[in-house]
Each structure stands twice: as structure tokens, then as C-alpha cells.
Amino acid sequence: MSVVYLSGALVDKDQAKVSVFDHGLLYGDGVFEGIRVYRGRVFLLAEHIERLYQSARAIRLEIPLSPAAMTAAVESTVAANRLSDGYVRLVVTRGAGSLGLDIRKTSQPQVIIIADTITLYPPEFYENGLKLITASTMRNHAAALSPRIKSLNYLNNILAKIEGADAGCVEALMLNHKGEVAECTADNVFIVQKGVLKTPPPDAGILEGITRAAIMRLAQAAGYAVHEVALQRHDLYIADECFLTGTAAEVVAIVSLDGRMIGSGKPGPITRDLLGRFQKLTQDSGS
Ligand code: PXG
Image (cartoon, rainbow, N blue to C red):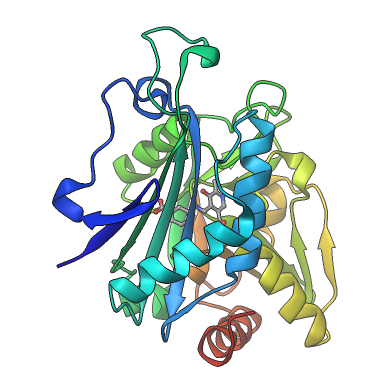
């Protein structure tokens, strides 16, 4: 029977409930993280905890737990569920309040930790690569709601994801208000051009993905040059390779965008090399 951590206690998953007055539900007022567990180890947990607290800080949400206590709570929830390979969803909501926006009327923020299995992309997605379309829904303007915040307000991404699904794609490319490439709905974007890796910088309006950072480190250690640089869709159309990074997808090749073939139309050698290096990292270490 799986158990969920809910504000201080491990409870049966059927008993894990929050109030209908919770501002997380009423307004998407809260933050979250999605984290993988490999071989019983919570992968890059310190990075995820740091991003969670930064997201909370950016929305003026005080998490009622120290980062060290949060780390211990995640580890004990994973252990209680005897999870070897799976997924942790860490959620902090503003808590129950009035039917108004005023956060001073909310009570205790709710801390929820779910440790469960994860449905992954099938192997053929990695063998053949994915097709992408560009969504007409632009990524949130950073001055309205910064994409650097992993907030419970994911409608922006959900609307783009629907556009992708309508076009038969499992992901969709999102542009920023300047028309530059930002990211996908739950993944960051890289291209390879003449052996050099390029990915949009944080100020392109992206979530600073933890897989993105891990890939940048692995690529640099392997001798590839990595540049954070503004990208146009044009750069993707003429790239030798393109791939996405994310907690769920890990590293997955993109072989076409808007019906235009990218590179050879197959996952490229550098993409495959980096996926191998990333998988080795997930199996060999937690960091
Ligand atoms: N951009 C966005 C908008 C995301 O939501 C990423 C990039 C990749 O970041 P990480 O840190 O994962 O490399 C994300 C991640 C889910 C789910 O269940 C979503 C994400 C991660 C894990 C699970 O929908 N988004």
C-alpha cells in the first residue's frame, strides 16, 4: 500500500487529502518539483530542493520546513514506499484560505510528497526520435510570471501541449515574446551545430532544468563546447542535431520541427553519446 507524506505525516494514499479551500487548487498558488529515483537513489535531490525553495521564495511562499528536513522527508517517503526506480512529486501549496486572493487569509502551507512509479516514453521514441511542432501559445512573459518559477500554474504549458497533441506530437516547442526559442512544455531544448551544443539562456524565458544543467556539465566534461545563446526556429531547422532534456524524458532526439526534417532525420551521434553518459550518471551516482 503506498503512502504519501502530507504536512508532517505519512498517510495512506487514499487518506491524503487537502482542503477545497487550498489556494493551490483555487489559484494554482504553490510550487512543485518532479524528481526521479534510480536504484533507490533520489537523483540530484539537492538541486531539486534548491530550486523548490527558490521557486517558493519568488512567489513569497514560506515553506514550513528547512531544506534539510525536506530532504529527509523525501528520502523517508521513498523508503516507506520501497521505491527502487520511480518518481517523486513534491508539492507545496499556499494552504487553505478564503475564497479571495489575499494570502494573509491562508493558513499553513501544505507539503505533499508522492513517491510513485513513472510512465516513460517507449523505447522507439529514443530509437527514432520525436517530431515537434511549434505551439502558437507563447511561453509566459517573464515579467508576468517567470518561467524560472516551477509553479502550480501550468496552464501556459498545458495549452501548448494540447496543440502538440492535436498535431500528433508528444511535445511542443514554445517561443518567447521575442519569437525566440524558449523550451518545450516539460523539457529544455538543445541543438548541435558543427559539434557545438547550443541551448537558450535563462533570460530566454525558460525553466532552468536540472537535466539541462547535468547535460551541460557532462558535455563539457566530454570535451564539447556548450553555449547558452538565443536561438531562432531557423537554428533548429538547420541544426545537425536537436534534442530535449527533462526529468521524465532524460535525453530524447528531435528529428523534425513543423514538418521540416532536422539533420539526418534520425537521432544524431552526439545526442546518443550524451544520453549514454546521462544514463551512466543516473545508474552510478546520485549527483
Ligand atoms: N521546462 C519545463 C517547463 C518543465 O516543466 C523542464 C523544462 C525540464 O526540467 P528538469 O528539471 O526536469 O530537467 C520541465 C520539467 C511532469 C513533470 O510530471 C514535468 C517536469 C518534470 C518532471 C515531471 O509533468 N517538468
